[in-house]
Length: 250
Image (cartoon, rainbow, N blue to C red; front, top):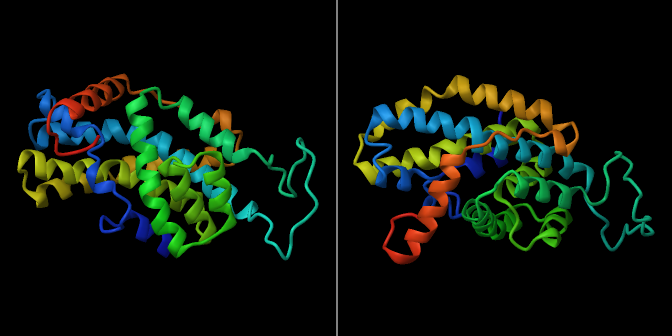
């Protein structure tokens, strides 16, 4: 059963800035690739199975890592370990940097990397207020704008939920954001759009199962499906956003 953290992070009212990202849908609409409900379903499914799977897998891995890396507090600080030392859980001290680098490598579009970090930065202030932890400080020490899946996964892990909950939250966000954008961009019936979203339930279950299995293994073995069209559209949208008024940042 999902815990409160994953429910809060998946809520569209959460002040993380997700509402300004369309997940590539705005560019797909501009190109005539998505014109209505018949096109929206396949677009969402494709996004879930590619970019969504990657994000869900890294969120799941972060949820596994977070509880094992609480970090020393002033009262419980231990002597510094050697650079190649491992924690009692067997995890290397630089695992956050490894996760961050591997997620960068799986996100070839600079525009998509920037969108992920922008949403992570927007989420950071809210999660620090609700779930303060040295783990978040460690994540931000790697990069001041943490990738959103890593930040959300870390928070869900800190709150006591497991990798499956983290993967489901982030997998859902990968399609719920574009689905919501479709209502605004195409004037679609919101009831019909939500029905389209619900029909992705089996696909989301598959993504969650894959992400959960991979979360306990080597970071290098996390899923890496590609979506070249999404990458190219992200780059085009970023350029057009700087030249013309667009409804969404990405």
